[in-house]
Image (cartoon, rainbow, N blue to C red):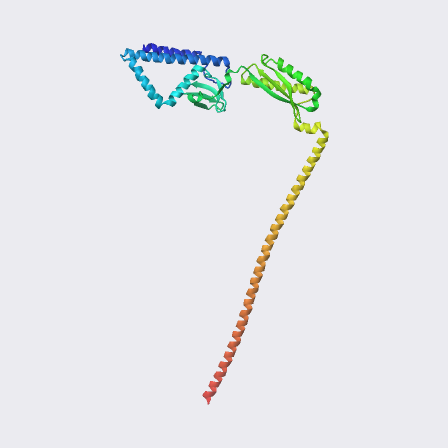
Length: 357
């Protein structure tokens, strides 16, 4: 019985691999039909695996002489214990089963979350977590319990891609608005890549101080990213060709100022010249300020040098005065020595006279 169960499990795995479209291996979405088929294949395969596994397990236990009733009773108690100690694990497993049963997405789908934290392709949906390959090719592992609480957008199941444009027209071309609109409507309604079953709208929506804006909305037949960008590019170039055929182009604020209003253009030119002149004067003033600052710096340096020279002059005068005082002292000492010498000479003469007497 165990061998039969093992063979059936392998066959279920083989069936899923043959029926699955596989992982997302290229940078584009795969479409709504394949997404739903993949979800159905995954749900059926996972359900059959669970049924066959438990049936094989119980059958094997019965062959070994194990009382299945007691095992189920014990498994109930074990389930309570596991539910108490492994709540996170059980919640993730239940979340994975809910993904398989409800089929919001499948392996290979392009999914996004409302808050922007998830954006990529589902690589694998496991019992515990789901792997999403992001645009930067870094895998994101999301616990199933958290994934089941998020609002997920399954971009692979969209039927069309929307082209939404705002086309600004020049105010001076108001007389041509009607013919331009007719040609743009004819373009999107008869374009081979635009889905005729969806709405194709081109209407004059609002008027701003610099332009009148056409609101354009339509849908491409293909949902592939490369096809969508190509159709959008062709549409923009075709609209530009329509405008050129009417001797006009897209409106811009700068052109509105320069062409539509000559008086304002002259005022703007005068204002520009004044601004340029003011800028030139400001540069000259800045240069003068820099020169003034340099002169003040030199003046400060000269004052410092003058103060140093004055200090040295005063020191020199003090030194000269000290030298004069020393010279006078020396002269006084010399005079005193001369007087002493004369006194000594007179004393010697007096002594010699006494000796002779």
